[in-house]
Amino acid sequence: MSDRILYITRKEHFNAAHKLYNPDWTREKNDEVFGKCANDNWHGHNFDLYVTIKGVPNPETGFVMDLKKLGAIIKTTVVDVIDHRNINMDVPFMKDKLASIENLAIGIWDQIEPHLDRGVQLHRVKLWETRNNYVEFFG
Ligand code: NI
Image (tube, rainbow, N blue to C red; front, top):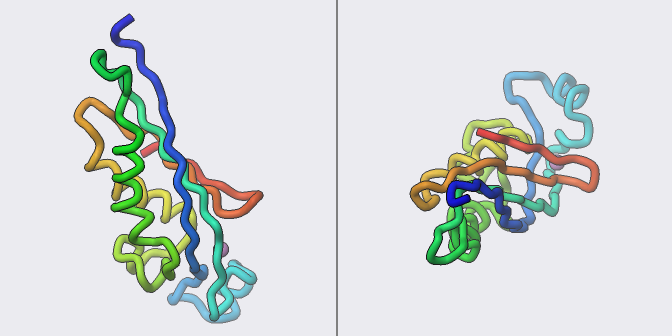
């Protein structure tokens, strides 16, 4: 009973701009591969971020981890860094990376993971970019 593992998720939100552009390619190749996502003058998304942790509830609190605390970690390490910014230009952990949601999910994982409580594991970073597209990273 006491070692039952649960998965618990905190949702946060941010808006940001980016473009998909590989500087090693010609303009034509970027347009061919990335289409309007390569638009020089950027475009924005309303991102929904779901961060799932797993662990055994603490017998004293009943919590795997206080979700207010998890929310504060996500806010400090991710939302405050990205929200209303340009992912390609303004976000240190995305420097020199292609600003895809795949790379963004990996960057977000690396931002959050070191700050979790002892005994709590990061399970999934799920990032919605549009109504149709999301990415999941399991570390
Ligand atoms: Ni985009």
